[in-house]
Image (cartoon, rainbow, N blue to C red; front, side, top):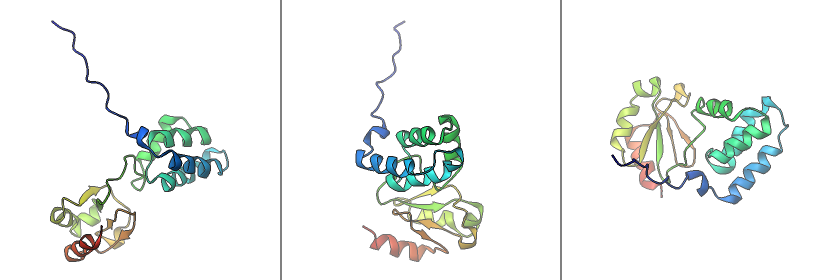
Length: 155
């Protein structure tokens, strides 16, 4: 029986990170004190500079805060406001938390499925249902009509 081979690895998304953005993230993170308690500020600094947390940013944060990469990654996955994948241009996020679901989030997403995706709870339950635009702007108490208008006006 012939030996099975796996397909060649696809280009890693992290390699597509703009070097200028990674440089800005490095400057922002290294400006923070080099302490473990700076993990969340370092996440926010890198995320703000790049718009998401690619592998090089995770490794940068781990190195700077002296926290193991595995722990940094595990912590990053616990925060829904931190993106671990590059955002899709023009795609809006509909909060999928319980309060938002009860307030009609699923219908919002279904009505605009080509332009929205469901995401984990955004912890803005008092504003349910919540939608996050493609520039990380928050829109609370969203209705289908308003979402449609916003998406129509968005590029």
